[in-house]
Image (cartoon, rainbow, N blue to C red; front, side):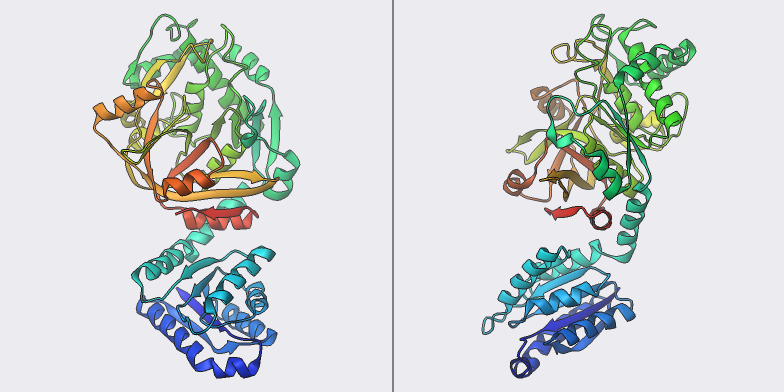
Length: 485
C-alpha cells in the first residue's frame, strides 16, 4: 500500500523548530518500519506547526493517492492542525503515539483523538513504540483491515443497500426497542424504503398456495433432512399438518418478496402466529428464506430475514450478506459457559441450514438438520424447529447495529465458531433449548468488555474477517463504528 506519514508539532514555530530533529527522528523510525513491511511511504518531511502546513500535507497525500495516512505524535502539538489535515483527506487515518516522556506527545495524541471525535472524523489508534511487537501488531491489523480492496468492498455494499426495499411484516415483537425503526430515517440516511404489510396478508396468501407446491415441499424436506421428529402434537405430517402450514407460510413469504421487490425483511412471528391453534411458528420459513436452496430452486440467493421483526438486526444481516455473499447468522445471546469461554448462540429457527456444513451442495447441509417439534410452552400453534450445530469456523465477524438516542452505531468484533465433542454440544444445548440450532462461539474480545459495551439481545455473524469492509460500509452510511477486537 501507499502510506503517507505526517508529524505534528507545537504551534509556536520556535518550539517546533527546536524539536524538529527529535520529531522527524520518530517519523523516520515509523517510515522505515513501514518500508520494511513492504509499503511505499510518502513523507511530508516537515513538522506541521500551522494551518498552512496541515493543508499542504493533506494535499500532498491526496495528490499521491495514499491509501492510509499516519499521524505521528511524539511532542506536544496543536490538535486543530491534525483536524485541519484530516479534513483534507479521503483515506483512513491512523494515529501513532510514540513513547517520549520528556515531551507531552501523549497529551497531543489524546487531544487530537478527542478533537477528531468532536467533528466526527474516524481514525485508528496505536499507542506506544513501533519496536514493541504488540504495537506493531496493532498497526498491521489496522493496515490490513483498511486496505483499499476491503474498503472498496464495504463502499460497494453501502451503495448496493441504497434503493433496496425492506419488508416489515408487522413490527418488532414482545417489546424489543432494539428492533424498532424509523422509516424516514432509513430512507434519508440509508436509502432503504420500508414496505410495511400485516402478517394477516401472509396468513391469507398462505391459504391460497397450490397444494402441489406444498406436497413438493413436504417431500423435499422428508428427503433432505436428517430426520423429522413427528410427535403427533406440535409437529404433524400430511397436508393438514403443522409442517404443511409452515411450508405454505414460507411459500407465501417467498412469493410476496418476489412480487413486491422485497430485498430483505423482518417477520414478527410471535405473538400473532404462534398463540393460536391454527397458526404455527415461523422457524422453518425463516430458516428457508435465509438459506441457499429449496425444492423450487437448487441454488437461490438468501432473502435475509430477521425474526421478531428485528429491523436493525435485518439491517446488520443485510450489510454482512452484501459484504460476504453468504447467509448470515441471527442468534440470541443465550448463555456464556465461563468454564469453557464459550458463548451459546441460538434462536428458534433463524440459523440458515447452510451454516451446518457451509457446502454449495444443499444436501450436505441438510443431512445435519433435524426438524424437531417446536416448544408448545412458547408456540401454541406448533410446527418444526430447525436443529443443528454450526460448523466450526476459524474466523467469524460478529456485528450488531443499534441506535443510541436515535443515532445509528455498530458494534463489531471477530471471533470463531468452535467444535466440541458432539456429546458435549448436545449436553450444553440441553441446558438452553435442545430443539433449537446452536453456534458455539469464542470472541476476540474479553467477556468483561463485551458485557460492558454490547447493547442488544440479538447478535449476527458472517464467516470470514470482514471488519475493514464493514467499517467502510458504516462510514459511508454515517453509522458510528465501535470495534471491540
